Amino acid sequence: MVNENVMKEVAYSCRTRIVKLGMKGCFVGSALSCVDVIVYLYYSGRVSANNEKGYFLLSKGHAVPAQYAVLESLGIIDGVRFDNYNTVEDNLYLHPNAMIPGINIHSGSLGHGIAIAAGIALDLKIMGDSRRVYVMVGDGELNEGTNWESVLMANAKKLSNLCVIIDRNHFQANFPTEELIPLDSLEEKFKSFGANVVTFDGHNFEEMDVAFKKSCIGNHSLNVFIADTVRGKGIPSIEGDWEQWYMEYDETQYEKMIRELAENRR
Image (cartoon, rainbow, N blue to C red; front, side):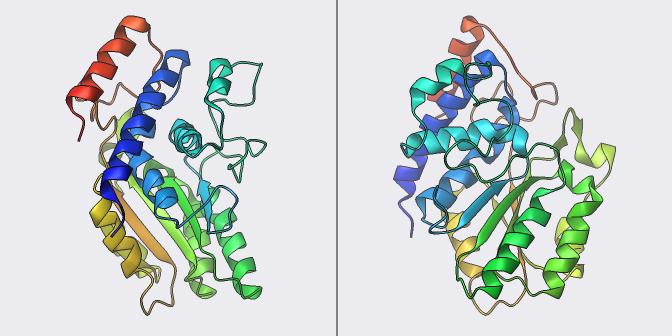
């Protein structure tokens, strides 16, 4: 079992960083929905910043404050750099930049992450390399057809080293996914494409551990993990609120959100 207490502490610290970045503008709600899964991947040793343990690609690039925060917690990004976040003084901005240590791809133009990850996974398989490739996509991002083309190819090539993680927070920008372009049942859709599919609570580290371990047993197809999450998780006043997508706020609102985080600390 992973050290759940350590992960909870790291996740809380990362949430405070995300909220701080929101003062200069970022997609706070989206980052808060996926940060627990990203913490798990790095702190369980499934991926590493130098890719020695495994690759992590963030296709839903607008949630990059979550990855920035985790990389900071690992000492990969110096926290001082965040003073220049989202300015011309640094390349830490609203979407991932591969010039930053620990970031593998530029992303934010949605729908390309699975294709890139499948290419890396195929190369690793050809080379006899046992590392895995983990790519996180947003649920609304699945409206892009390139995702499904990539899954078809991954199934044809039996890329069992490819792990697609869906941040299922049920929002696409400022619309509920099921009111815009319905996605359910995601499990059945991916299974029909030949994928091994596991669904878990994206804010429960124990469930994550069971889910990711399960995918390693007797599996010869790509893996799809549906993380059931809450946009804005940890701050009740913005949880599941369609308006709280891109946020930029003043010191008063920042302090209020930090208090909420502390009061609802797990």
